[in-house]
Length: 632
Image 1: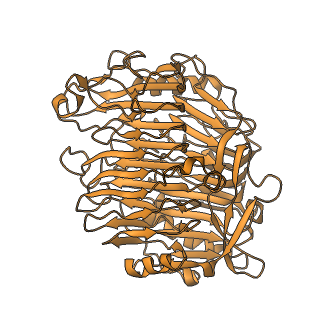
Image 2: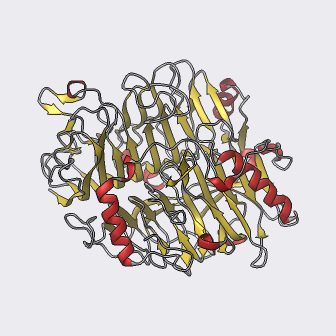
Image 3: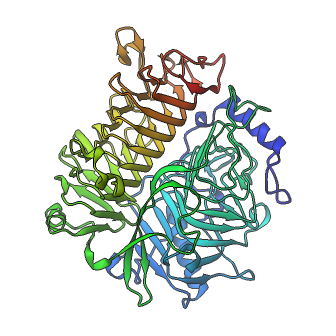
């Protein structure tokens, strides 16, 4: 039974029921969602351009506490009504709240967050900006059918740098923050005081959700309800309880996290919860963020690198780091030419991309160390002539955050290319000032048809990948066809000592992730094999090797650590496609995997082993999870 208004948090019995349900049906095997909002979103009205964005443009709305709450509410509701059903639209928004308090217990500010919408506070710390109310994401329903409602496609939205004192809502949604999302919907640097759920359990349907990312946040006054979330990563966050797990829940540096608990068939009903828990995170660097100083001027704060981190970076009242004035940034608008961008970069400027869709006919070249490229409201970059969209020199301290890279109509060799410098992994400069990629998402198809050979190449040693989803579309423009939206590989990592948190790579046509660098660490990996394989002969890694591993380390790799890595199959062409192994890696004592798994979602065929021929196969006979606690 899904909990009702009087029992907003699932019991352990419910958690086991959800585990059994998801294991038996397969979350991602649900019908593809039509881009239609739930019944209570109403009809979208035209959204008036912002008059408060100033230099940040007409799609940035800046609120302050002196504004009437009714005017703030109406703006938020208008944007939500347009964006909730707008999965592949071109509108992009940043909703920014200046320091102060919005709403009250008597009159809470409650609103929804739709596609391509960033909600963020403009204080130096999360405590500077408080919303008394809820910033919610609910299920969407297939063609208005209220019995088929899911969060499986609630992508491309974010919540950051503020406090939510949970209040308001009605009935089942009362006094609970709902953040029912899947990939590419991060929650960062947020303090939630009150109940929070990562699933929407209010409409009585299966309520599936498929992954998410929380970092540098705190939760007090209520257990975080995982519910039907099949996989999730939570990093450097303080927790006040966690309800349950399904297949793969990863925690690192999270005071209050569940204890390590992973065993064969951990996701089965009544079995141990599939928790991978590390006391600390090895190397982290929080995402840069926009804020206003005491004089009301915009700045970008750049946090410092941390090692063996645990808990929010701001727990002691401030985050170590430094500030950059907005004057050090070239503010990019959709009409800005690549020539103007490259000139600004050559002159040593940082970039701040405003919300919009950007046509990129030639490569953007990032030339200097410590260049910061910050995206507001999910700006989307599309190469138009088969060019690489952006490349970065092999120098330290570069940061890219908050961007979407789409493949274009002419095949590119890559969309983002981080170059490496030979021998840089041994240089202290790179270790103390790593390049970081935060909340950056890659798409081949979906919004528009496109193709690429390798979406993302990271040859930068000591770099940090923090919440990246590289997705070859299974629906939308070109999605679901083996001969359209073509792409071999979602990610190639050649740099040494690269660390990745919250890495998802899905549906590519050959090796989906190739990791050739030494000393790499991955905390949480999620993959679905391509759905649309037309025949076994079309998908062979070798003459006798069926399929392609989702995660591939060649024999040259001598050291690697992987934690909480899951690979799923759903071959939906009616042909029995087999994948010999989900992960392929050298048998070496310093190449180690912890808590890895496979799941058969639905369809035909399956995955024959978890890694290198080890681990039970998954198919329609045994759907999984097939779990390995360690390898070798």
